[in-house]
Image (tube, rainbow, N blue to C red; front, top):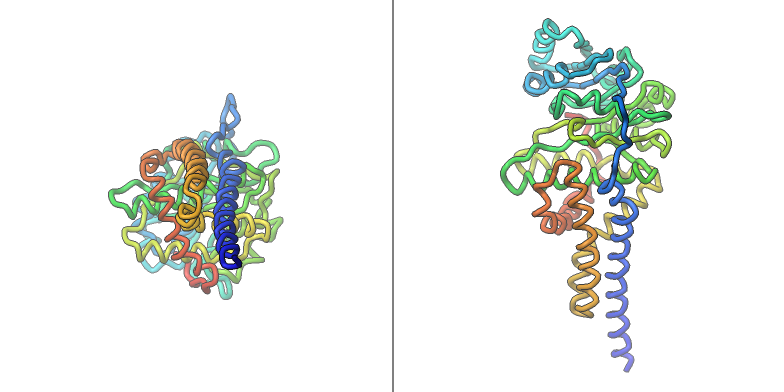
Length: 376
């Protein structure tokens, strides 16, 4: 009798655990992620056109600059603007390439940094110098390996600066290529954007992506720039935004013309190295954000194993709970993917969502790894 009671109790506990995991997932989809899926930007009769300083940091990026820099230099933007390229101690032909660009594009401002900043690893030193050199109050950041999706990138990103806004979060997808690795990379990028853009819409912004991010110089200097995180190799985008973003001062722009496009990694090894470097900053987020993100990731990780176990306990109710999450997730993914120009991923979403179980196994250890000191 005792064994039977113990056996039944464990079955109930395991099924209850699956139910709890499912309801946690549903909470995130219904409270957070649907905000991006059904987001409608406020209509405006005329675009904002503030003076803007575009800032690109480059280190041995001659090839990428040759391919991508013209996209930032030929923007259709009627207000005053400049493009600053911070050449951080490059050993390739970056300096000569920039000098050639300067002959054609008078709005190009070149900042050559010949030395490393002792005790400030990563990209924060060149980016700080670029912001310091910027002539205008609004800075718009991207990377040397990114290209604006359209000639309206600057203009569309400025539409986010409504009254009181000091930070505008953008989206930077990877180009679609053949192969499953490309789908994995793009889905992970979409999945990350689903989180940080939805959290921002819910009044809890926690990060931005330096490939497409804008904020005001006054905000940067009032918070003493990167001084609190200068000892960390990363964090020039996500950690800085995590420190200074609020419900009142942050907005998002997801117009496809406001995207910047990046080339995806071509093999698993390069991609894993890239993502591992990015995840080393997560442990420094605000406690509330770590709790929210952790609860989502843990419930996401446990959902499919818990579902399989639940099928052996009560398959009817297990399928009902699975179907409920499936339906809501499908709607949210379809709408959000459509908004972020990732519609071709929708046919793969369930397989890619299951793949995230493996993804967590690969990248969770990165949260405890010591980050590498270089930034490119």
